[in-house]
Length: 62
Image 1 (cartoon, rainbow, N blue to C red):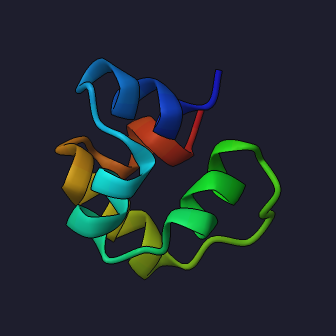
Image 2 (image 1 turned 135 degrees about the horizontal axis):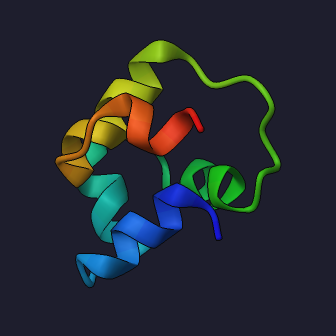
């Protein structure tokens, strides 16, 4: 399972809620969760990690 989805669901957060907390569109979060985006800007990684209260590395790097 995708780490964004995993951490989001563990926090009982919807994609829309993550979108609002991170400032990233819900559609783009969906693309990331479905591994449909190969290039992710560092600012996007930071925004999502901050919204999920997790280190960037635990979400985007294995």
